[in-house]
Amino acid sequence: MKLEKKDILKALETISVSGEGQNMVESGVVKNIVIFGDEVEVDLQLATPALHIKKRAEVDVLKAIHKHVYEKAKVKVNIKVDAPKKDKVQEIKGKPIPGIKNIIAVASGKGGVGKSTVTANLAVSLSKMGFKVGLLDADIYGPSATMMFDVERERPLSVNVNGKSKMKPIENYGVKILSIGFFTKPSQAVIWRGPMAAKALNQMIFDADWGELDFLLVDLPPGTGDIHLSIMQSLPITGSVIVSTPQNVALADAKKGVAMFRQESINVPIVGIIENMAYFTPAELPDNKYYIFGEKGAKNLAEDLEIPFLGELPLVQSIRESGDIGRPAALQEDTPISNALEEITKNVVQETVNRNKNLPPTEAIKITTMAGCSAIKK
Image 1: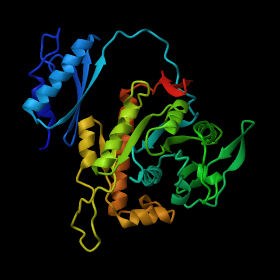
Image 2 (image 1 turned 90 degrees about the vertical axis):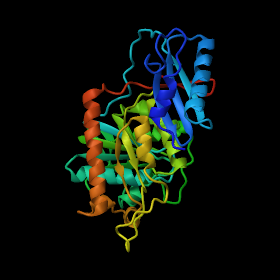
Image 3 (image 1 turned 120 degrees about the horizontal axis):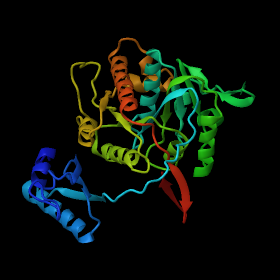
């Protein structure tokens, strides 16, 4: 059975929270509903911290969905209390890099979904459109930008900028690139603890002569971890792009990636979701589409999470081959792949413009260590 948001809302209209005159939907208690297969996640915001009221609301939601929608639905209820906030001084996030207008983090909850390939092609497409572009390969443990841009043998030079020694990024196809791959051998494993990896990233960010850039794309590692926090602590990220394939395993991890950026202590706007490997079209059957990993999974997730869907890329051999030989597919002219990449890139630009128009700059993230755990504070 396919669960629909409208049916969930209708079920929740049959219950109310103690102290509220209207039903749960009309009173604004229901803040968000996410449907993932037979799983339903409902976010509630209550005006009281009373434990018995929170528990009653949770039980009522479970019963209503099971009774009116689907009795076997797996329901999770998240409850937030709208407690009065204390006035405090906001900490300014990190140090902005002079000359860089927009910093876009490209992330994926799961490895192997083509995040680095998409990042490289976005960078090239932006450059073809006339933007000044940089790419920071922040995937410390699995750098790939050097291979994808055919610059594995290059080494950044030291240049003097206003009396300070800085790294000059390697440039190819109109994109300025820095990666840990420039400083390690191809067969060398990077075995670093978090603080050492964070230090290396900070050097590539702040000890580099990036010059004037319209976009700096940051290729994050898969998952949600220490490197992500270090980047968001160091830089005022304009927004994030999530890359996923359509299958449920990847979408579940992509959802976690969105949740990370949306945490109150992080609060980085989501520019949108890109679906990679959306379908396969064999060369001998150009009109056929085979949805090997599922159909429109990332698009449906974007709709459920109410964030923009930036477009889809097919599973095509030439994209892989282009990355392997260091010549991104976006360099092609007027092909189905280059046109799809151009359309996605235009959407990224438009959503970035919308984000800058409608939202304030990203706030600070302060990381401290308490009892061996990382605590994140504004």
